[in-house]
Length: 71
Image (cartoon, rainbow, N blue to C red; front, top):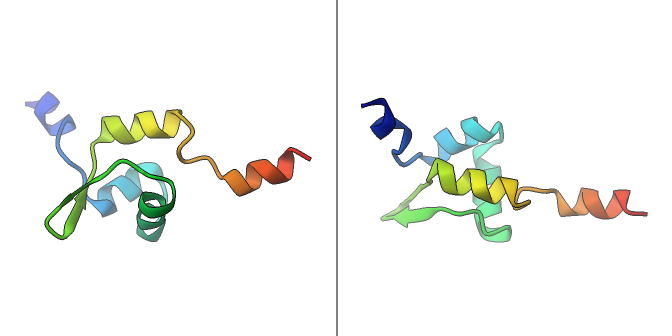
């Protein structure tokens, strides 16, 4: 039963809380950084596994901050 709960789809608020970011950031990352999410009707839903892989792959990196530290 616990495994089934871990595999459920997360809402915008839940994925924001999981990542420690604001819900506005989630919407911005969807449009600007191709954050993996699935639109079901009017709602966005997220797979924790897909988001974890995206973060580990550098999808959430702040590119502006990286450019400033590369100097």
